Image (cartoon, rainbow, N blue to C red):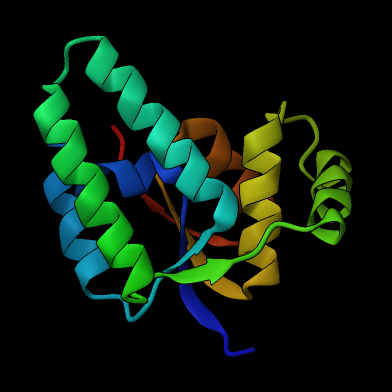
Length: 147
């Protein structure tokens, strides 16, 4: 499996489909990456986050439908390299809890970090401060999209 230049956490990926702080920076950075990696977990998490934002009034149901269509087109056309989630990945995520102490790693963050490592990503793109701290603790280069 080839080394991946960057693994994209859901928090950064959302910035490609929703205009919010640091969206321009995320768009610019990720457009320079050839086939950034995401996990199969990311697809579910993306849909949940987008639906939650639509329900909270951030955008219309029509926009959500268009964004979903665009995201699924990107996935199906291979814009992203998909890292599968497996029982092995779950075990690897569990092992990261000790590796990042004293950071309180959340479940999905542990899964994303394990997926990034499995994809042999050289860096991780995130808009999540805890994810950023944990990735640095693991020796990963971090592309941050937050203040």
